[in-house]
Length: 151
Image 1 (cartoon, rainbow, N blue to C red):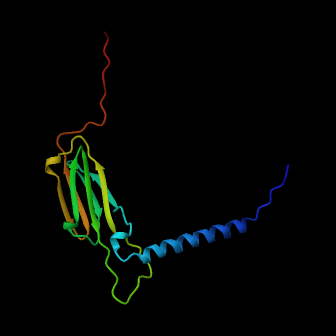
Image 2: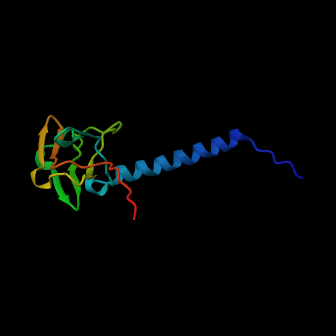
Image 3: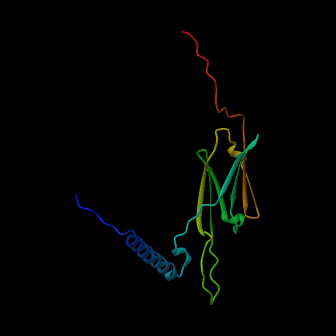
């Protein structure tokens, strides 16, 4: 049986060179695009959901957006929240050093319980936080004991 000798440091160096090459390619594509819309950018806003005695509540962090930038739709027991955060263009004579915030279109889908009152959903937008309240109609039984009878 032949012995196989491998130098892990050479393998790591090769991976580093490949990553450097990929990063340079991505940066060139980003810088060569004059129009922001040509740059693929999608993101997913952070969300919290909780239940009260009378409703379900969903909150989404949408910093930098206005209520006009957000759309809500309900269909087939699903709530869709979508919109777009526009990128602030560079100031003339300046150049970004790094970008950490997410821009572009987003969409979130939330499945709704059977007892959700779809006709009376309310949404409130304040300080970059979208709060959606879905009232309950009746009780949704999560478990039920079934009696077994004799024939």
